[in-house]
Amino acid sequence: MTDTDTGTETGTVDPSPVEDDDELYGELVVVTGMTGAGRSTAAKELEDLGYFVVDNLPPALVQDVVRMVDDSYGPGQSIAVVVDIRSGSFFESLREVVSTGVAHRRTTLLFLEADDDVLVRRQEAARRPHPLQGGGRLLDGLARERLVMADIRGDADLVIDTSNLNVHQLTAQIGRRFGTEERLALKITVVSFGFKYGIPVDADYVADMRFLPNPHWVPELRPHTGREAVVADYVKSQAGAAEFLERFVPLIVDVGGGYLREGKRFMTVAVGCTGGKHRSVAMSEEIAARLTEHGLDAKAAHRDLGRE
Image 1 (cartoon, one colour):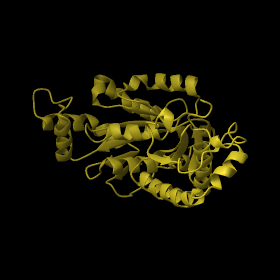
Image 2 (tube, one colour; image 1 turned 180 degrees about the vertical axis):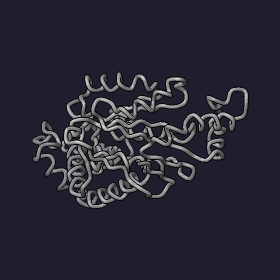
Image 3 (cartoon, one colour; image 1 turned 120 degrees about the vertical axis):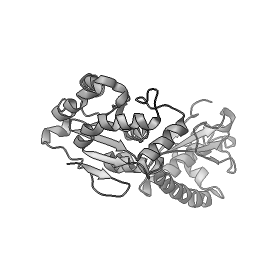
Image 4 (tube, one colour; image 1 turned 90 degrees about the vertical axis):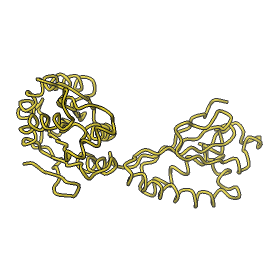
């Protein structure tokens, strides 16, 4: 049954396996559709959701890709392949691949389309000719593509019309249909670091713990790290530490909600002190623990611990 989506919720794809044995196998999603309708955006989102993604794949090679993934990652690894009109004559074999299935995997055919005027604007903005346009107009290429695509569109399990969708909205549509609760959750890494080694280049937020007394100058604490209770207790008991945590953690929770609304599912919070051994380590562990208590997928990592 075909589910046509025009930007509103008109149906869902049942993610459950058709047979009990299929729980052992990851899903195979075949992404196709009109040039400029958002295939690359869909592929990127599927990759973020944990799928092994191959772009511009001739249909005849789908079986080979599945075998390669099975051998390298195991049959539980979900796969997405992008097949489009650039495959030329190979494209004709796509219907056979979809109809016969691949290695016991449940196969979902996703077709992306949009109105001609929208596709023309997108192609002109990208300053790329249509692969079937030849020496004619871009509209001529789109007309030929629709003719070739007509049968495979009719076979699609899910059709999404992206005419009125921006990148974030399309990403959200793909996430809702192919993402599990675990894959859709925001993943936060709270990484401690030492300012003398430089701020992490991938940090989304940076917090400076140098406003707290440095345990380095306490002889009995100097050899220990912020992962040890004796140091962690000392750091968290200092003036301003509790107030900082009470304000900073809710901020990250609120911002995290915005990240998810914008289709971003990874956040790096960098917490620094002078050397990345005491204060930043203790506070990173505490921040990660509190974020976890809020139901977020948070973990602490320590970039510079052990460098001294």
